[in-house]
Length: 147
Image (tube, rainbow, N blue to C red; front, side, top):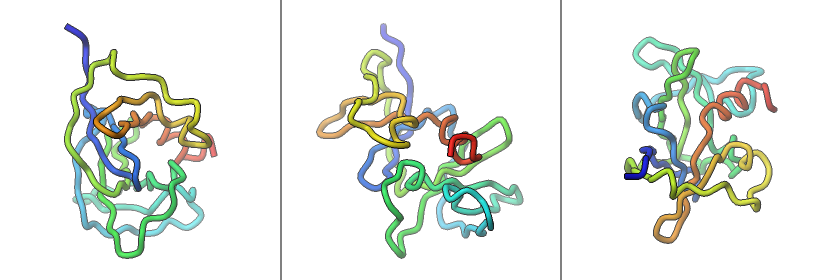
């Protein structure tokens, strides 16, 4: 029997992104963000999550797909990290997908820019690709290490 992994699927613009389930703590919506002056442009703000201050990283900016349309509220995908929790701002959260390790292919060479460094692989679905996100890479980008 082949090994498999579970990914939380989410939409970022028209991209279907997969985030390892073990990295996800929770999903929440509707929370207001407090802007952070002089922070990386990837940081969407700070989120007060039941008294815990959480940095919100805008995945649209990380993947260079353009700004979220006016009036569209992001979904907070709260990730566990070594330094506490971090929110990834996505457009929509979908199903958890179970993907066999052997079905994950390397990221296409046609990917350019920052997205190439953040996608570790792809999985073919009916009519689209699930892009497997390197969550550690996103956290490194947002902290300014790779900007």
